Image 1 (cartoon, rainbow, N blue to C red):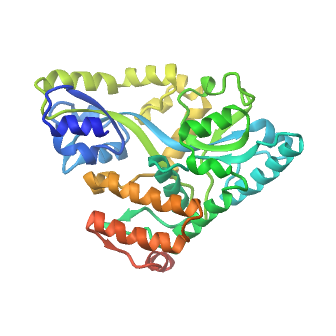
Image 2: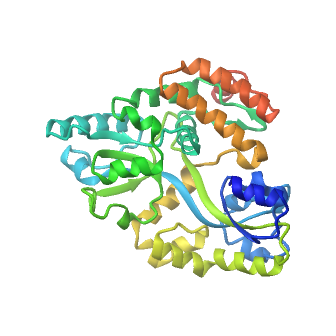
Image 3: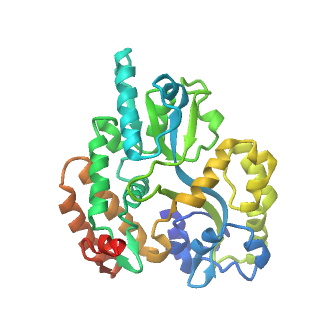
Length: 365
């Protein structure tokens, strides 16, 4: 993103079209073209409305979505059957129980490096996504809500403390340095019962030559005390406002995001489409993973506050994942980390903070 941002802010005439992550529209908006004059309204309406809202900044549609992503739970179907489980875990407590039992059983067979659960714990945007899922599922709500900093509450503290207990028990001590492919590599090696990661780039290719081949499933992430939560990811295409060829660029963007292109991308490389209607296509319905992705997106999605905070989002996310990481690494008590994070986010965003416990009191009324 930094490279694209420097191009745009410098007024560079090329490139005309940019591939953008779901969290970038608010950050890059002032240098992106409004697509509404170039894309018919009925075409815009074919996409999930939440994605269009995410890509709309100050009334401008600055990107057209082309694929969605969500946080998911991978699980070993063979190991669940072997240890007497018929379904993947529905709650975090069930996951802990299953992971502990399977890990102990596999290690007793000689797999000393086998772990129950791997995920992305490095200081990166991925940790922001994981931690947001934990706290929302526990009832801690989003980081920002109604233009206020709401992160500092007992539910968030409880969610982070639960994740801390995983480190070194059902998750490797080194999980605090794992990014997406670090977790994938442990999983592909057959050394984990469960994994949190994004929708697979291609579920078949993911485990070729792996002990997990033909022995894994994908499910929605487990519930906490409040709900299940899955961070929304995805990509789209935008046009530089400095482009000398906006009409031609808009035709390319429409082509890259249109129905047949998305269908082809979905069937060939497993990218989940952004159009609800496509999930009725028999070719897509034939792959059960897409019904899981659709269900998770519709029922469990949670968005990062990137559109609301705009250019301040990178600083907000960094402050957030650094605070979480200090807790996971055992460097700071969660109460202190949350209090300091609240103060830092107030300074970054200029928003007020909701008092500790106010969220719980509102929910209890």
